[in-house]
Image (cartoon, rainbow, N blue to C red; front, side, top):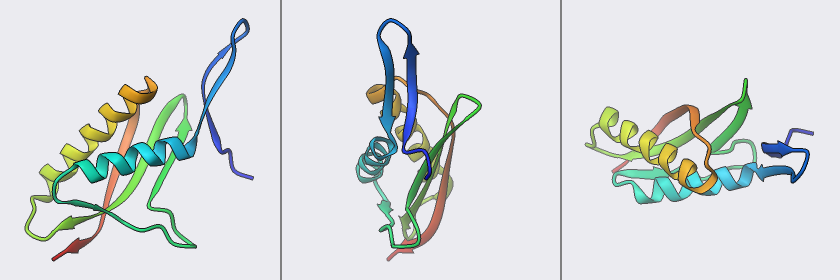
Length: 108
């Protein structure tokens, strides 16, 4: 079974603090909905629209989105990356080591 929790802090005195991967999925969905010209991709039975993992103590985030037709792709994706990073940091006190935004389609 895949790891469903991400370890935030492991202190002998206070115990272990972990966050469910669902927390990061919810934060990313909020960030996508707040960004203009960006639309979330619905998750299917075989595919998730967002994914997060910890590699070498860095949070790595992958998110699939659709953009409004005519929007500047580079600028919109950079704004979304910054919004996701700041939202995750404000809510969990973790910085993302890498945020990959995959544009999988356009909305007309």
